[in-house]
Image (cartoon, rainbow, N blue to C red; front, side):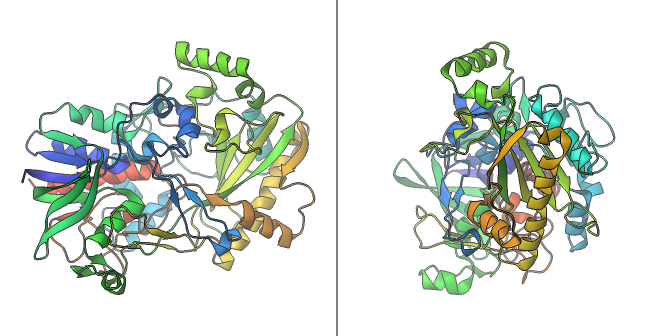
Length: 538
């Protein structure tokens, strides 16, 4: 059986960073086990190509939730990256760190070293921000962040003006002094190509002799000697293989797969494991519990002026933007679908924003089978203003169904299961309509398509957002961090409570969700986690 100093399960946003930082000195051997395959695919590298990867089983786990009463009984589609780079290879690339108060809350919950001032140096060190270095931004790091202000669709200017007319400030940097306001999003791209964690961190690490990456390698069980994790069993090409870790095993498989692997290995809720015939290695009711996610909805409008629909839909338009992209790595295909955005409070008494905005200069009301129709939008000029909640109080769980590692776990999202979440979303959708009613937008809107002008009463608005809402792909907290082993899965150094030689380092450790997209904080968690590991193995 081969032995490596460190075995990392998962090559996603955190795992790629860990592979790079743990191998950089040359002192340690590192094995990365990735269940998926290569990220060297055109629609992965082309930023707007993620519409094509949204349902593609070659790069996507394509998880489904249980039917959710909070979403009018709908089954929600949960894409997760199954390839090098993980979900950073198929996401919308919006680069948001989260609010200062989010991380200070983590610290104040008993997690020293996880406050905003502690983490800011990591955020700055890992990035190479096109907007330039300042008190908050960093340059010269491995991960390039693009400034999109001059590249977005002209309609975005109207959205920004309407947001200001509705009372929000113009915010030049959501990762700067404050989050509140409207602005354009920074995105994780470089020279018109997606800047995934694999491109920024894993690819450079793979050039080192002390790093080995095994693709199509599904970790199926952690192996223990007593209470110490010593190896990993994995499935590859129909065969079961085992490898041994001399120092540590690190789970970076994400908020679904990390708790799943712990449960399969006998670490989790005792009644669940016993009921499935899995010997209980270490009972912990929190493994897979405390699931938090951001839930969002779009309000879609028919415009009086051309939008991206008129360029992206016809064959000649596709040809035009395709040529522009291939020749110059610019144009709509080099950007995210979210050209603008913002953060606002549904109640002025809140200390920080609780809602996030997204502006999309195209519309996809008419569905297409098997793909998210970003590259084939509606046949009329349309655009959307979307929003999602930032710190919902609803909690769900992710629990295995059987002892078979190939069986997808049961995902219970419990969206809108608290009155507070329903009330804040009701206030939020009314604010979206307020933005659309401002002069800068109203003068170019022909009609509201979704939900439409007939939906006016509070009851109808709630029924509509239950029916049409869905995940915005930010599940966290299923292996959450905390000092108390009765309430958390890992300690502040990300070591699994009650087990030696085992850590979880990915978004599943977030004690609570953050204000905004979770990818930047996942990458930071990999960076911070690697520093903790290296401190313990001097």
